[in-house]
Image (cartoon, rainbow, N blue to C red; front, side):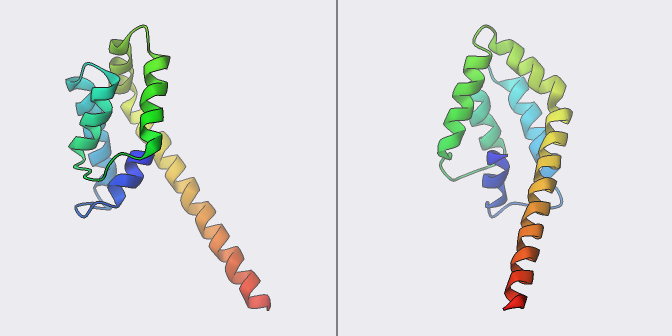
Length: 115
């Protein structure tokens, strides 16, 4: 989700195509890299994210490396085979975030109207 947030701030971001772009770049990065660090870099580069990585991205990379310390190849296989599931989870999370934001905004509007 942090990569998606960064991607949304890029000038070439296309709202109607961004889920397809994320999915395609995720799979391509899994197929063409050998390490988790390369995967993260390739994924961001594929999306043409020009900003420097957020601090949390390094933490994600370290977490993935520790989780798959035995076999980074297994990590790549899982990403490739589970990419549709990962994208579905990301979409659900994005929709939940959107609903929370709308509810918060609505609550603020209702509170403001009472004064």
